[in-house]
Image (spheres, one colour):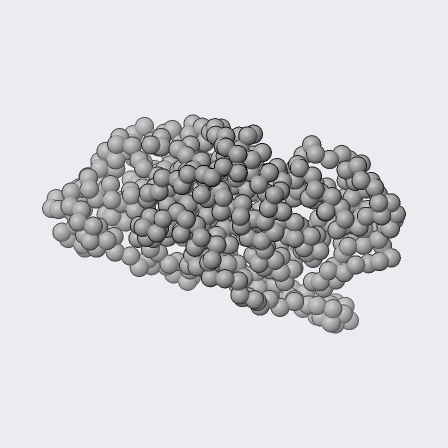
Amino acid sequence: MKATLSFPLLFGALAVLASAPTMGQEDPAIPRPAPEWDAERAEHLFNRAGFGASTSEIEEAVRRGPQAFVAELFEGEGWVDEPFYSRVKGGMEGRERLARMPEEERTEAARRMRREDAAQVRDFLGWWVERILEGSDDLRERMTLFWHGHFTSSMQDVKNSHEMIQQNQLLRSNALGNFGDLVHMIARDPAMLEYLDNDSNRKAKPNENFARELMELFTLGEGNYTEADVKEAARAFTGWTDRYGSFRFAARQHDRGRKTVLGQTGRFDGDDVIDILLEQEACARYIAGKLIAYLEGVAPAPERLEEYARFLRERDYEIAPFLERLFLDPDFYRDEVRGGRIASPLDFLVGACRRLGLEPPARLILVGSASLGEKLFHPPNVKGWEGGAAWITTASLMQRGNMAGTLLGEVALLDFLRHDPLEDPTVVLSEGVGQQAKKRAEAVAKARKKRQLGPLSELREVERFGWRPRMNLTRRLQQQGVRSDHEVIAALCDAVLAVPVEDATLEELHGALGRLRAEAEFEDELLSNPQKAEPMLRRLAHLILSMPEANLN
């Protein structure tokens, strides 16, 4: 069984997770035995290939078996052309008209265009999060999110909603397709060309940004190319630019001379360079390693990495067969991996919603995720989100608990900006955590001064929508036939957590429920009185989602 965590050991646990070992595997030509298949392993696959699941969904996946369930992941709902229509804000005519306006009118018109651009981003990201929440095409959306962190671009630098949306749709439509094709397409993507300055890459003055990141972050990884390779590759991409949201090849700005890249010489253009990169064994090794580390939460052992890199090369960089093999690999379900990954903010919030059966507005999840450090369309830098232990700080840990409280209707959305955990009995499990809670409060105060807790205006906008969770935990537990307080706590933990908890933690939760009972002056069987039970169950669920176990999946 997996090791579980008690609250005071959180940061020690993070260090353990960051260095967890992996196992080697046999030759890919040898048939693999099917992994043992039970609820714990089914939930693990739901968490990694998607964003969590309810108890009934997990039970159905167990009934269907691993092969059928994995096959279903790749079916999804199918790709629909133009699922979200985005308008080109401004365009050539609009910009020319803007240039002819008097200065005062031009300033106001430009401001209006920026507002429209921001509104379009909000609409699209709302649509994306709705897709994630509904779970109709989980694996595609999981991989779209992965590629968004791999081929990063940021609205902050691109400053064009249509181009960012265009890029996201490109990643979505090719999320389970061919990696080589995707690299060729991303090299022509207007948002990427702007983000990495290739729109200013000219024959007379080559810009190396795109060529460098293409090698370091997109295909080969560090140490597998030289500075000379970067300079030569940059020449091959001269003249690759964009105009009003479309790729444009500026022939006069392209360097048609001979280049030498990774030992090969010719009159290469950008496509030729990409083909050379894809031929390198380092490319398959880098992509295989990044995919495995993302989905398992730890880097693969050298032998296992080589096996999967070889498989990826043999399948000509097709992503779907690679993922299918990984999801049916017994090592994907080993003890060190199951429940051992720190959930990203989006995983944490969406996973809680799915386990609780909540359907919050997408905007609430978007703002909550951004306030916890994962703002879609705004990765922190060209490397994307670091993930892992970097998701958790003393401030963000408390915020996660408060955002969970918001989903449960226990904490007003804006309250976590001014919330003192010491005033809330559901945040502290035992007296030994008091000092840690105080330190977390101090860290939040510092973060608030630095405006690190998310845009206040956006939080207020979502607050105006109002959110009252439609849920009945009392009825849910009654239907399971639980009666005693210990049974209630065990059932609630099983429902809202992706990992088991220690007996000592269950006893601490029992003490917390006792304090809630005393506060409500209620001594009868808990579920016998829904009016008294439901508020206590929601506070108890808030407490559980504030524990370290809630941050693992």
